[in-house]
Image (cartoon, rainbow, N blue to C red; front, side, top):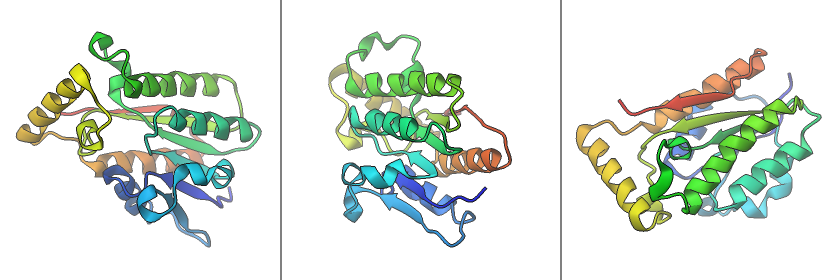
Length: 198
């Protein structure tokens, strides 16, 4: 399989940088493209480029737009053998989301997980994989995305794991991306990987 364009959104975030570094093995005549506001390559200004990506690592959380981008990529590539890896969150599968059911982050990640399953059920040629990590260094409180009870819940969880040294390392997520891509190139599609704190 000839892979031309590989794009990582949110490439300057903690997780995004680890993914970019972790894909060093995956080089040929084409470079891996990192899109991030911090490097002057805003994701939303590069939608046409993203639409053509053979492998899209959908890492940048953009309220509502992260899912719009993912769905647009799927519809554009439904007849092509391509791969999208969505970086989700275990927030989306919380057993009792009552404290944050109205939070945009929860709504977006839940929708991403549900739509990933639906896209794969469609039997389109493009495939979607989801990596669902728990608490990592790239926490919501630092990104100013969480509010109210949800923010407190996230901060308490983050603080506990930080004290215990059990935050998920960004390299773990990068390794999952590598494993999913390698498996896909060998003909095996992995639909979901959950990464839990010890």
